[in-house]
Length: 226
Image 1 (cartoon, rainbow, N blue to C red):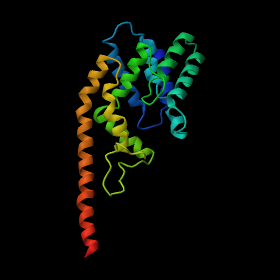
Image 2: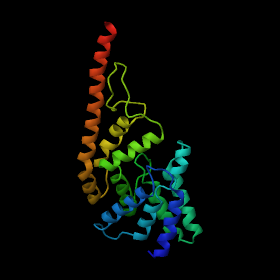
Image 3: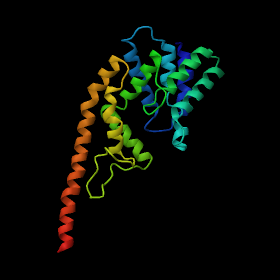
Image 4: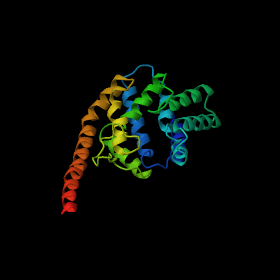
């Protein structure tokens, strides 16, 4: 890829990114993760991969403003339109579009091409480990969702069966379970290296808040009875 082409795509990405949990640095980390994975694979189309990585989250603004939208679908359409307007081939624009459409963890479209699988893995690696915890907490704060829910018995829920969104619910639904859902061997290895850090953080914060409720509620109950 020519440097001028890279700058054109990068500049468009920067104009689209406004979400601090999915900011331009997230995009760069995904790109670098993808290149690390691609270096272990054969016959990678680097022009498609680099472009898809740079543009994979350009639909985030629209989804943030309207949660009913799917940022992967929105971003895929925007990327295709941008590439065709700037005279990229239809074939490349379609390949990039499909990579972006299928990168979402909760999506119903699954990656088919090698480049799409690499993007999927690279994006999920940035949800793994300590960085994944940090980004999730930032996002939960942005949308005013709590750290955890409290069960009717007054105990802190671990998030497993929660219907209401929270950090604990997101950890149990997504963050804890993503390590077996990678398409490439290198992506799996990179994610596994981060797994322990995420688990240790969740275990620590769950223990801390649970102890506060267990001990404090009991003391408060005794004080109310006196």
